[in-house]
Image 1 (cartoon, rainbow, N blue to C red):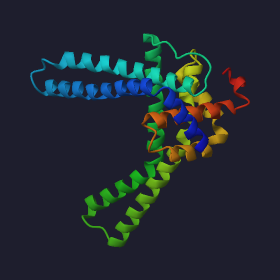
Image 2 (spheres, one colour):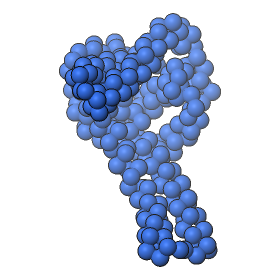
Image 3 (tube, rainbow, N blue to C red):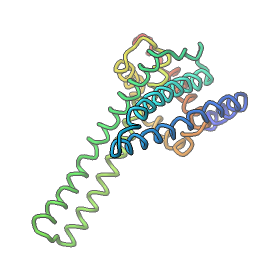
Length: 238
């Protein structure tokens, strides 16, 4: 981790102005999306005059959001040591990246929902007991609440642990321009099978800085090092 941190700080020192400026642009796009959504919601419940312009504004800003995120993803990866150039930002590549991010997010959300299902069943039991009887014994209530807390913690842990299967998916997306998002996710899961514990520990150590420039550069360097250690990646056409 110390080596990765030093490498990240060295790269950021060389490209500090460019990275700060590009990241600032991303931070300006996100509030704009929420402003357009708020205006659209107000128009929906009001006279509806601003509904169409708000929808158009959201779509346009979402496009710029994914375009900027695609650019930054390629920028961090290639600065981390990957050969080649930052991919050109075309309409087709932005749409493909948006589909890729939505696919990845949906898979993570479904896995999280699956692992939290037991804890939600505990809530259903508590609700049904109170609804049908109007009362519940204190010992039983404390037992159910304790079970809910334990099952939630276990579910979050396994969801966090297994989400590491897709840790190098961004790198594979930049590297494999012709592969479908589903193929990228599959290859990422195959290549990280033996490294989930290492990925989890790194993510925990980098948890509070991941959103900043330094954290993203550390993630890019770690992904690049992890991928370069895979001796069998050529078998998957990567």
